[in-house]
Image 1 (spheres, rainbow, N blue to C red):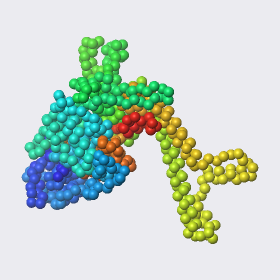
Image 2: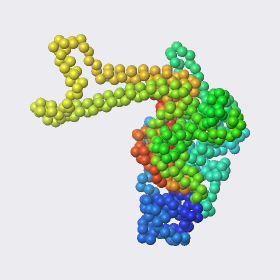
Image 3: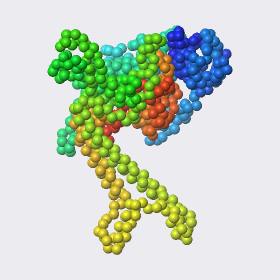
Image 4: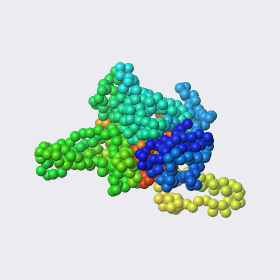
Length: 618
């Protein structure tokens, strides 16, 4: 049974030990009275299996609701609390159909029982305060290259198999989740994670079960481990030629030097880090003394390069939007020794992005250590974030000069696509109205044909203009004018689109040859969100939201239907929500607030003949 986890532990000032009674059973638990009733109901769910929406809890004649202030109930140690309700799944849970729909076009010799892509993806069973891990793993599945490399191309080095154990366990998790829609139990991966990092094996302060952990810390540790151990043999494909008569060149990668501790793959040849290739960006860092006397010409001209796997969004009283928090994180004041002054001084560190990764991870710095309660408290401030992020202003001047022309050309191609879509919609609507009018005439009969003309749709200004020109031509005016058919107009629009796409390819091709795995537009679209509900990092509940279409089958390369909606992964409960639900994750209270954002590069709308890799434009 899944458990919505809430760490019952707090400090002596904010927790009260009580006894939960449900269907003849007793459960000893510490209630954190500093958190609302919603958190307490999750805690009850983890013990009894009764979904929060199905619980009826009465304390001193008052029913506990999501917004109930637990401190106002006057709980006393050892107080018995009765819980009514039947254990069971939430009504919003999506279940895989018992008899799976099978389509002929989806079947192949390898897997004749392929499941329907429209079914909800697999959830993850909560093993007791492990929602932080479940939410992180579901978000990682929104990186198709990570799944593909683990399942299809990962090679274990037999001489150093222990270091790749976490990567191998993650491979097994993703493989099992890709082959079934049933909830998966990540026991072996969890045990391996706790072996590699004992922090995730800490026990609850009550001594009952494991403690809740921070999802961002789990994400960072797993990604850093994969960066060093998850290596694949590099075999980049050649880019199509810039011109028909031009030479075919092979694009280089960013992994010219192997990762530390990595050399050749198990089968020989150079290996590359998948995490470094797709998720690592680079900064150019300048450090300038705040005191004019401490500055030298050498200091102002010196820059260093640093690698990053995520960008922090710092939250303060002046931060209202993601952009503001990201910009705040690029400037920092530090104390260090000044050679010119001969003493410690304050320096300003300024970061500019010199390489944009294909997948950008953003971390909302919402937790801080609160000394009076001796635990991580949560910053409740509302900080909005966009579904499409333009990050070019945070880049170096050199990189921005390369990004902007490609970005503008991508927008031009988008306009061409939108124009074709609008034209097609208008044509379908006109044909539909004409068919309705013809059907009305047929029903009324030929004698009522004249009266049915009112049923015909009013002619548009363009149609009236064409009719007037035709009538004028019949009178001898503009007799040589030729009027284009719908097919001709559509062919011209598609030709214009193909031309714009080819121009985009010729423009971006030098960048692809330089580093084909980076972001070349500065534009990102939101793929997934890890959220936190509650007041502290070591309590509350974590879930994940993943945009439909982001999860790609690593065996077939097919992606799930993208209709603008999102999957909400609440442990093993998987439900579908609209995009407006994502906008409500900006925070502003103890409800679900965004903690980790995963952005993916906006697809390059290249001609099909120019795409050389499965996920090149995904």
